[in-house]
Amino acid sequence: MLGKIRRMCPLCWQDSVILVVTMAVVLDLGLLLQPVGADDCHAALLFVTGVLVVARSTNGYFYGMTASLIAAVVVNYAFMEPYYRFELRGAGYPFTFVTLFSVSIVTSALTTHIKEQEEAQIEAERERLRANLLRAVGHDLRTPLTSIIGSAEAILSPGNCLSDEENRTLLRNVCSEAEWMIRMVENLLSITRVGGASYHLKKSPEMPEEVVGEVMEKFQKHFPNTTVEVEVPDVLLEVPMDAMLIEQVLYNLMENAVKYNVPGGRVIVTVFQRGEG
Image (cartoon, rainbow, N blue to C red):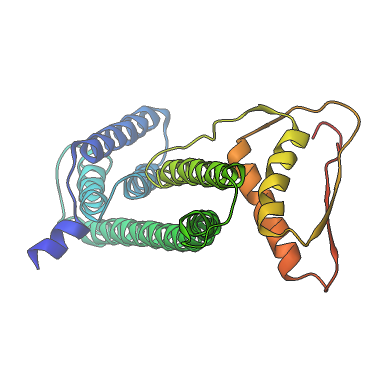
């Protein structure tokens, strides 16, 4: 029970500062408007607005409820006759006090509840993205692992009749796929930080034809019987990108094209310039 209360009403100095500053600003605005003949109801509206700001800007219910109590007390004390006296016995005072306090409480509770719903929705979306990311990465890791295992089995096979050059080619393939996996895992570790802090892709100018060439080399190893046509412009293009991630995207798209293509179909990769993109 105590733990649930702590979760609903967490305390921190940042939220305390927001409460004090907001209420002070609202009080100053009310006092500034008072001498110019503004009706006393302006103070109630100002303080309800202050409660809304506090509830929206702080965590849990404690600060919004506290702001509601402050609003009801300060309006009664400083903005209702007799001024600078706390009085509930006059005609209409109890009703005004209870109404202001109730409106402030409801405003605070609704605002806090809406904020909690938004946070829960954001967290659910984040979990969904993480789950999708893990599924995608599982697929992307299996492809180079399959190639590494196949090359290693061919080299270690008791009946290995491959020449030294062919064995070296297989070993180079193992190293290449292993380096690909290392880069992919490093990018994955970077992307997992997205939820905790702002993350920026490290882009550098790359020539699209070189990126497509890297993808083609890997693709032909895994799909040697698939016809692939590549069309690139004659002009020299430099595109800001994370080359490794773009290579993985292109490879996945080409793999899907093979998976869902008609028998004997072709895969066409086209690079073109559209405006400044």
